[in-house]
Length: 283
Image (cartoon, rainbow, N blue to C red; front, side, top):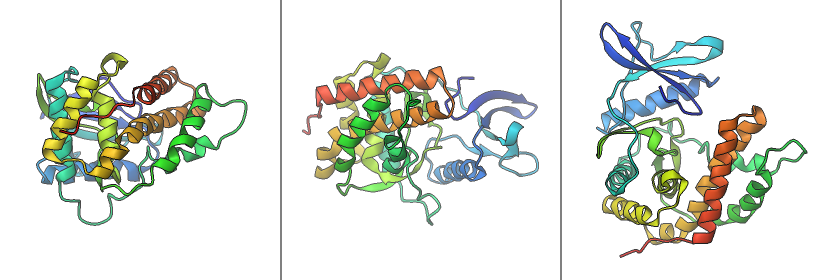
């Protein structure tokens, strides 16, 4: 099945029905268990996300090849949505609902954003002749934006990577939001800006009309405060830069055409946001 940069997915037919078998190549078991805990918590809140299943022995994971992990998830019928007004407004309202959930009990979910400033800062300080293409662009933009991210903003539980391939729709109806590997505690605006990039760039073309629709629908569930409104243009440049940094780090570890292509796409998005200087109408 279609897979992401951080996992591989398989449709597994069993005598008890169909399940999703996910191969997680991460080396840290705590990361796997973290996402499973997130899914269990979302299930208690009635939020549309797949349920984590257990193997016969009751374990939530089993060892895969080369010290990797296998998990089972509920099979849900659906597909990646078309980027149109109806699906964009639906996902925006769902994101608003997510941000209104009461925080999970305890501190287990409070961790640094894997796409946050601390995660990509070491890349900006890298030197050497073997740095990947677009690194100079990343370092320059990072220097421009890092000091603009300090304004106090509402924080809470965020998905962190809400793109269309992390959702399932049946037509215009949302079935589930998937892939909570990047979930953490951070500014809610980070999630908003990241999702705008996910759902308002059809075919890598910026759509201010879809972005207006997204912000309007999100605000029906959770209106942005004044500080968030002022910071939104900065976060619309910061989120693709953070994603670009992640892909550049992967390129340094292991050259890959997919990561190289994605880093270039995010560079173009950053340039678009800088040139457009878009802000929604706040009626």
